[in-house]
Amino acid sequence: MAEERAQRRLAAIVAADVVGYSRLMGEDETGTLAALKAHRKELIEPKSAEYHGRIVKLIGDGTLMEFGSAVDAVLFAVDVQRAIVGRNAEVPEDRRITYRIGINIGDIIIDGDDIYGDGVNVAARLEGLADPGGVCVSRTVYDHIKGKVDLGFEDLGEQKVKNIREPVQVYRVKPDDTDTQSVALGTVGEALPLPDKPSVAVLPFVNMSGDPEQEYFSDGISENIITGLTRFRELLVIAGKSSVVARDGATDVQEIGHRLGVAHIVEGSVRKAGNRVRVTAQLIDAASGHRVWAEHYDRDLDDIFAVQDEITDIIVATLAGRIEEAGRQRAAQKPVKDMVSYDYLLRGRQCMKRATKDGMLEARRYFERALELDPEFATAYANLALSFMYEYESDWTDTRLEALGHAYNLAEKAVALDRDNSIAWLALAWAQMSRDQHDLANVAIDRAIALNPNDYDNLCIKGWCLALSGDPAECITCMNEAIRINPFAPVDCLIAMGIAEYTARHYEAGIETFGKITGAALLKYACLAACYAQLGRDGEARAASAEALELAKTELAAQSGAEAEGLRTYLAAMFHFQDPTSFEHLLDGLRKAGLPE
Image (cartoon, one colour):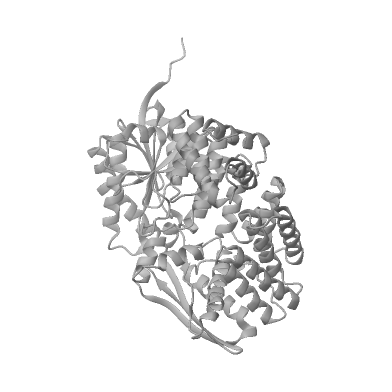
């Protein structure tokens, strides 16, 4: 008898599960189960019938559904998520049933009432990529529903997912928005969803000393608290730069929390007088604006590290009280021998923020003074190394390679003095990447991330390492994590993501990514020109190339007629590809775009 052929059909598959289900069951098994059943009976079942869908099976907190139409599947998912928001309005935040939903179109195998196949597996992986309360769809779903539904979509790029051989192009559904694929990330005022773990933003502490010259000290206190908090994997900590942007123009902490997508805000002040300092800090619930905790500390300056550690520990304990104390092994900063050296360190870091040549040189003088007082101050060596890296990267010197060499040697010295200093490993990774030591750079930045897993700069450098090593999918994943931590400073992330897509021959994706960069940026137009040229879109390629050459005149201070050569040198300094043919591929695109020889 001939073997029976398996029954197949094309379908839209919806996979949904409950966020934090294990935690909910652990805290209230009976109540959680009752709430889950109520959601299914009163919401999931009637909505699936309304949109002509079928519930295939229930697996614990998961639900697998099948729809004959991609439009119906997406509208069902969005309708359910909106309805759940209403149902949760009167439910305490820690008891809410919240879903993630993933949708894919694929060829499925029918076995009785059950379904199987890669189409089902991809839907399940998309569900895992969705935000709490969110919906993610595959490229095939997006292509089917584009222009047919009044919804916005954000392109998350190609994602490498478990047990699926090829990367999956993923789109996040934005129910109350227009299509936002080309909108710059981190737009001020754009709300971000709350993550599925404790989250906090630390605002710059207010200088109450009456002396504007003491601003560096109050900023240094808040930055060090951020550094302390980022060591805890259980927390999402927003980068200081984004906290500043979100604060500017906001009327209250609730608006800041809304912009940054965090549940808690830390704010405080510093009053420094002579050898005494008063630090006040308070933790605020961003949703209600209510104060959760507040304290003030009057200390001698030589106790300042203890104050920072005490504030950090209290915030962590308050936000994540369920974290086992035994699991909190953080790399404590080594005390400096003379508090004046610490003061010089803070002044230098303040100068570095200006991101100018003069600011960097002034910062370097402060770091050198700190090291004169304490020759074993690893953090000062690390920041001094970073100042040389900024000089090298920004082409602020005629001896760029000397600057790179200084950065490398100083970073190695910092690591040798303190192997638990994440800034030292970051500086070393950046220098190694610029010296084409890609394997060593990946090891160093992985060490920095292990010490400080939520630090924006660590994730950004890791993303660059991945981009230059030719791993676009991992680069995009890493940079999306960085942008979530620092949503208002994504340009470096977008450039790395875009060049990773270009080297992988994903030119359309590269155009979308570079297009998200706002303003006139040399790298943006140079890379756009190459992407357009490789696609044969000659008019757009030549226009972008002309923009790049015009910007090269001012940004590279090239002599008249030498802009093309200056641009090539600049790109060679920026993109230290592990595979030399990747740079040749970029130059090939620029030549096709009309870049003069």
